[in-house]
Length: 512
Image (cartoon, rainbow, N blue to C red; front, side, top):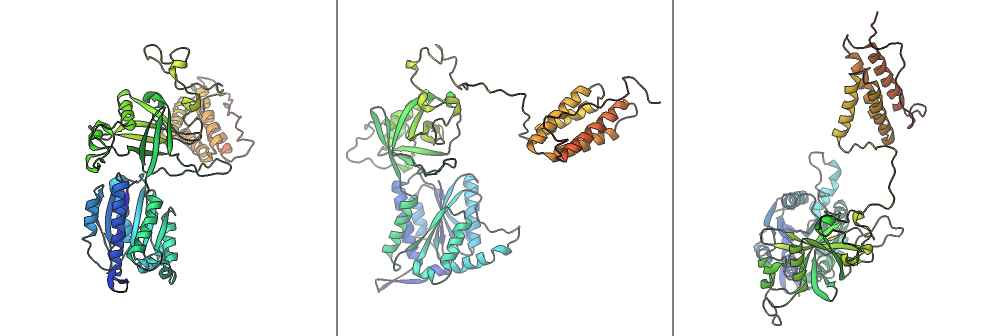
């Protein structure tokens, strides 16, 4: 989950702060100290995080694009300059542009707002209702966001004005998924560290787990940290969290599991694996590797996670892993370049059978326990997808319009038959009744009215050589559709079919 750090460099950040009764610092110095602490933590514990640094006042500037080089981020912090007044909306628009250009609108992002912007924020929120459609307020962002507001002020200072209310309103506009952090006590380096410590504990604490497979195990870090989820259909919804003990329950071929629906994807990194081991394929990049500890021998420390990654990659299989009670996921190898690949973990929806074509996960077992090889002697077949125990019975094929082209095809089929009346009378009414039933089932009354108008138009376009019965059938069908579009139970019964109109005309008769 990428992070954008938004740093206020307006004149308000140059306000002096007295530390220890003697030396004076600016609020900007406190903010820089806190961010340096965050970057040092991320470099050690959250090293796979992509982070960008932006500065803003009346305008915004991208100081460091998304990177994993935290030295570059810290260097940019040390070279900040002071600018003019603050413009909140400009800064938020800048964040939106930077994130969408790099990640699009589907990737979740964390935004750390660091500054002292209360006057500008008050003005923006007070004029919120006066924004036109051509200049909307930038929140909420078009991508999923967690907004963390790091205030260079303590709670007492914020509560003296409406600043805290404005910050809470800003958080609400962003979607409410985030938090406001303030300093506890006087403005000083120690309290800034404590504030950023709370942010780290809340959003940037690493998720360490132990991956088990029989008698083998490995300490791993899961990145980003799996978020607790709440299932809506539960009677008493409770957050469900991923266990720190991950148990591999079996292996299955990629072709059998296909591309299953997942709720999140995570990178799995072995802990304390050095650079030479990475060449086997741990998924980490060279620039991120740490020097091995004294207790490690370079490249000679066996690691189950590395073995698992290489095996899954070579064999073309995935490992089913249990995340908690009746909650499963899968481990697999994913290449991000020709030379690098990562060990990934995808989380399924909680439940005993998250993938219907596999059945219940607990019912799967080793091939050796089957009476005969379910894949055949030459791997020419597959036991999946499982067939349902009860064959569903449908009275007829169900009409479904997923795309506009499907509906257009059905309408055109009716019109083609209408132009061939009376030869295609039976086919015309069969297709007409199929469309009528589908429209009634969907409550699509406008379709019935529109189809009736089309049939009336076809009636007026009939050539002089057309059979007289064609005009009668088209008018009759149009009238019946109009009656059904009113919703009157007498004419809109689902089981009712429009029957051909009986006329005195016979095939080949002429109008006298």
